[in-house]
Image (cartoon, rainbow, N blue to C red; front, side, top):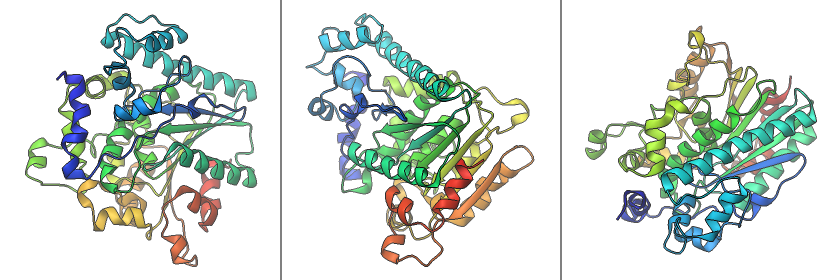
Length: 409
């Protein structure tokens, strides 16, 4: 078995431990749908972009390859060296397939990322020379239809609030955070979020700094955004010796380390080539995390950038945390499923005061960190406990203030 396929087999090999790897969130159809006021970008679980030109990816065959676009093209029915589909897709994106995966796949993905950044910049420029980019990033356990629905609810809410007041463009980020009935696949979702974040990083880096950037995430979308904006290592790279002995810190993502040991393309890309992933340097960037499914230690590396900023300044203007001490999904990982990952930033106040506020508000930084408890306690418990983005948007008493903190002048 080749090294590139070894990691695809991991999902099956550890299935007994993790119950299942979740189902693939497929974006082949919706990836061709765009609108004037918004633009969508679509990632598989490896952080690879769906091609915007050429044949539409086949859902059945992508599912067979566990959601990896690269495996889809490398599969026996889609050998990279022979498939007319891949050659046509390469051609449609201005590239020529050489038959060498190590050259063809990275080249196509880099071309797609740079084209996406350029396209977004042009769309912003057409609106206004200083139009605002509003980036929306959903969490794990979303199908394509569910993600689309959540974005519609959020954008409708912002329209009601007249936010932002200036000309703006919505960038909807769709990514495969897996979905299904069993939460064990959350470990896979976390690994996917790292890859997607690094790919998004290059896209954001291609957008002109004259445009303000506002990023709004839900749930595990916080990890996607964090990896796009700084070099997250504390919560993602633990000692394999500790893992084998089951000495888990609250922030351990033990399955991530198992993936780290493989030799597949994206793992080399992430762990050996991170210095080539330059972090965004926009002078007016704000980040809001709603019900973030990540530990506060994610901010331990907040000042780690590529390249390092002068004076180790953070550079991002606002960090806003929307928390809910009663969120049934976030609290469940702590009480019932601690080995699958920590989600404490979304509901434990101490995570904000220990990890976020000191580094963002501290003398080494030039930003402001704010925390909102999304419910005041008057809301019906059956609603207040829910984790869904649309439920928060429609019902949380402090949602308007949270959104204004991010998007108002």
